Image 1: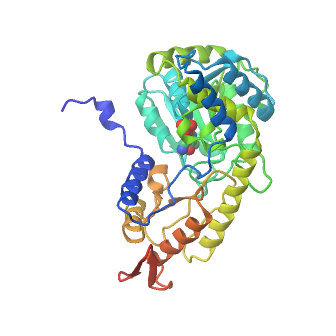
Image 2: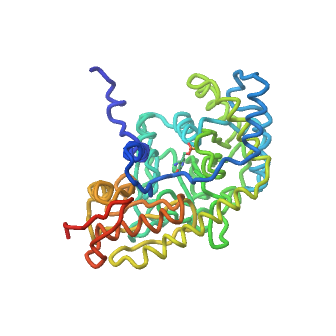
Image 3: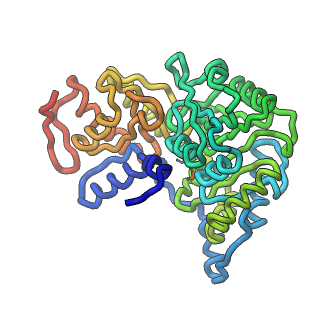
Length: 405
Ligand code: PMP
């Protein structure tokens, strides 16, 4: 079969692949625990549902402007003002089919073939593939000190004359850590000075724990929205647990938004008016739903940390936010793909191999599910790996005996 070289070189999304594997096992009646998921179990906010339902009832479901319906953009402008202390105009906002498409649109808009994009490891799986999809070159920066916090020196070593953009995702998927205010300040200053685009993927910025607050990148620039090189990405997927609604957005200069709009107009025309209405409903409705989700996640994070603490050999950095942590499993295996498959087969627990995030030897564990899933999931992993744990376990209604350690 003739397929393009580029398409052939693009890897399947490992997280979506695992979701599918888990779904098939569940369909067969297997007692799978999904610690791989990037979505919580909450119901969508009622304000989102009512808003979409009103649109549906009106039976007037047509194209919208490519960059989004004005009322949703207005809600996004207010969100930006409230959370970033930055007043932007409607011409600085473009709504896309999830933050994923926002990031892709941005890369398509700013990257020439062979331009380099700096990505900080551990990184969200899609960044390197998306950079390749626009014929750019991903340049991965791995913190030299073995932590999840890159230093400005690490970043500077990776900068070349081809560097066109840097992607920063903080709090970070998959590690859950939030970079320091100082690091954000330095990277903003550097990008503004050098004219390098700084893509701030902020989709977890409200899901932060322990009383911490994610810094606003705009705080560290003196440039106005038309001259800044900062582009901020956000969306409803993580903020409200509305992953299936597929609404995200980017905030950038008028010129960039104009070009991103041209690009999007040739690909998807616009996102669905129904889903935009839902996103508007969520943004203009009661925001206590975000706090409630955040509290659930913080509580789940605490349970996950407690369960992992009793697991000899595993080292974990306590997440500051997001849905995830990225424990170091090298005491058990250096091959995270094999380890993840082993845990799925033996213990029916879904984890995501750290290799996919540029951190071999680690597994990403999600605490977005229920407290029971976390406790039971970690108990199963312990049973499968730790010779000091009891060698019998119940998985569903089956009693299993460990015979491989
Ligand atoms: N950025 C990061 C860091 C993510 O983790 C995700 C989703 N897992 C996205 C972007 C995409 O989100 P959306 O559902 O809005 O496309």
